[in-house]
Image (cartoon, helix red, strand yellow):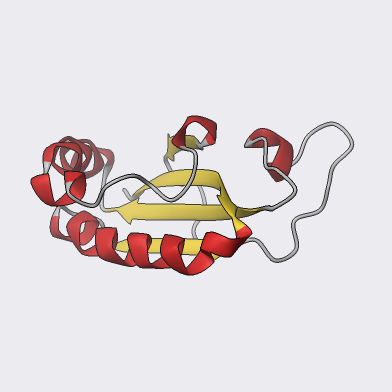
Length: 116
C-alpha cells in the first residue's frame, strides 16, 4: 500500500524560485531512495480561517506564501528506509540551509484510505 509524507511550510514570497530550485535539486535523491512522486504546490488561493488555517498552522508572515507538498512512496517501509538514507546522504547535506524556516514546518506520514 502506498505511503505519503505531507508538508506545509511558509516561504518568503521573493524566494519562490530559490525554493523551487532547492526542491528540484532534492527530488532526484528522494526518487533514488524510493519515492515514486514528489509534488510542490505554491499557495495561490489560501484563505484566512476563523479558528485555524494553513497560514496560522505555519505562522506565516505577511510576506510569506504557504507551500503544500507531498512525497509518495510504495510503502511505509520504503519511506522509513529512504528518510534514514536521505538525512545522512552527503549530497543532501551539501545543499545547505533550506530556503524557509524549518522550525515552522508541519509534516506527517499518512496511509491513504481512498485513491481514485
